[in-house]
Structures are given as C-alpha cells and as structure tokens.
Amino acid sequence: MECQGADLLHVLLCCSERAAHLARVCRQSTIFQDVVEGKADIIKNKTVMQDFKTVADVMVQAMVQHYISAEYPALGGHVLGEESCQFTTVNGTCLDLGVQPTEQETAELLEQAMRGADASTAARMASVVHGPPPDVGPVAAEACRRLEGTSLPLEDLAVWIDPIDCTSEYVRGAPAYTDDVTRLVTSGLPAVTVLVGVFRRSSGRPVMGVVTQPFGNQNSDGTWSSAQYWGVCHGDLRLSNLPPSSPAAAPSSVVMTSRSERDDVISSLRSAGLQPMAASGAGYKLLQVALGSALGFVVSLSSTFLWDTCAPDALLQAVGGSLVFKDGKTIRYDRTVADSRNSGCLLAARDEESLKRLTVALATCPDVL
Image 1 (cartoon, helix red, strand yellow):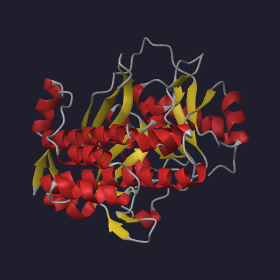
Image 2: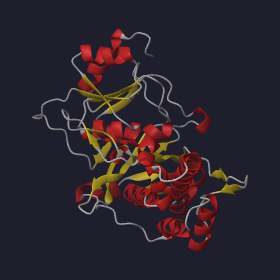
Image 3: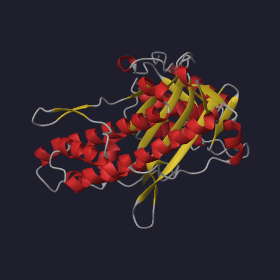
Image 4: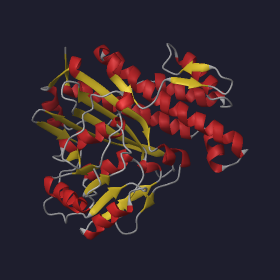
C-alpha cells in the first residue's frame, strides 16, 4: 500500500500544529502559571506541576498518534514516542491517557488526570484535540507538484514523536534569551519544539520530518504562534521549506552545544577557531544548523534519543546536510524505545566542509567516541 508524499506531509503538518496549539493551551492554565510563578505552596505545586507537564506531554503524543493512525491505519502500531500513555494519579488510579470517542469524555479524563485543574482547562484541551484541522502554511507549488508524484510504502514506514522537546524551558516559560554577539536564541520558550519524524523500517533512515516551534513567534498582543519547518529526503528527492544556503554569505563559526558539554570538547572547538554556543533543546539546536544559523552541532554525552533526532535528521538531509556519529556512521531509527539512546558523540552540519571542520576539531579529543 502506497501513500502520496504530499498527503503524508500535510497530515504531519496538521498534527504538529494541533500539538503546538495544545502545548500553548496547557501553558495558559491558571494552575500552570501559579506553579511557575510560585504563588502557592511549593511542595504541593511541584507535584502538580510535574503531573501537569506529564499530561501535556502524553496528550500531545496520544493526539498525534491518533490522527496519524486514523489517516493511515497501516501505521497504527508503528507510531512511536517518548512517553507512555499510562498515568498514575496521586490516589494511585492508573489512567490510560488518550483521545476518547467524544470531546466530553476526553475532557473528563483530562480533568481526572490533572487533579486540581479547573474544568475549563480540561475542556479547552479537549476542544483542541477534537477540533477541526488547524490551518498550516501552504507548501510551495513546485514542491507540492514534486511531492504529489512521490509515493511512499506505508508498510515500510514508522514514526518517532517527541511531543514537547525541551520541557525545562516549557515549564519555566521564560521569554527568548538572545545572545548579544550571535543574535541566536539560546533559551526560553522558542527553544521548545514538537518533533515528528518518519523513517523507513527497512533501512532505518528518515524520509520526512516536521519541526514545529509552538512559541516560534510572539505576537504584538503577547500571544504566541508557531514557526514550522519540514524536510523530505526520499531517494533522490530533496525538498524543504528551509532557506537555501547562500554561497555569498559569510560562513558561521557557531557550533551548538549542550550546557553540560565536556570542557575538553569546548576547548577543542575554540582552538579550531569555532565558537561553541550552549543552548537548550536538542531539536532546537539541530534546527539552527538546518536553517543555516549555526555551522554545526556537537553533543558528546550520549544525551539524545531517537525521538530527539529523527525529524531534524530529515530536515538536515533535505538541505544536503547530515547528522552522524563521530566515526561517520548514521543513526538507524528502526530500534525500540528500550534501545532508543544515541550512544556516542554526534555531529551535525549543513555541508560536508563544515562537518569535516567539526571532525578535525574533535580529533584532539581521542576518548570522545
């Protein structure tokens, strides 16, 4: 059974934007704001906050799984994610969070899971889950034409979801912090992403990815709207809505790193004339490389998982870039949740020359595998 590339991309874009909307609705909750701002008992609210965050994560994932599986039943058992659907309330009740047959039933389940949450929050969340498909930006005519002529084998596809990547910034809710020199955002709500990546089970390699920033654009009234990016890398087809690289542009020396990156790795990058830039969120950091805002990405601490990298990997490939281990091997995504950690040093760049610069720089760190 085959599916048209244009149709699959549209489903992913709609699911991702619906997820972004749900993430914004969750953050508008009075409970969410009270906990973040410390307006109530700190011990009690730490627990409520953790539960609320978990409910948001699980419902985003369950919703994306629901709509992808509804559109493509053949993918039903192969839509994978970071979160488990099971949630245990404070009184020990075990709930299976997911999309219920009706909006009212979903609202009641959410209210039960978010003990102490006002009914209106659960109702708003359920309205997003059951509401009409959201508007998403149109795919350029030429890209759409090429995608419509591309078929993908459903029986060979699977999906990795990271419902809310960079949950620490999501919970903290701070505005964007911009580095004075590079003008890159290094923390705050814009670092939060929803990641949905499709891969071939036979090869373990990504073919399509959508990276959505639920808080990508702040409007004049203080509300947020999404920034959404996609990429397709199927056979010889390379398509995306990312800006093309410009030969005339001065090459960036910025390398996105983790805040906990090893000191010797940071020193080696600096010695090679590169500028390490610590930022939040694996998905966000990889997106900056795909956008051309940074030369590369390095993480040596085996701190990413398949759901973090599948969608950005597709974006990078779509613009001629790559995400590889230090020895040059690519990530295979045909693994289980139990075997989902990317063990080893990962490098990403938008072109081969930049990737070589990273590899040479880290040659002085022989124990970085």
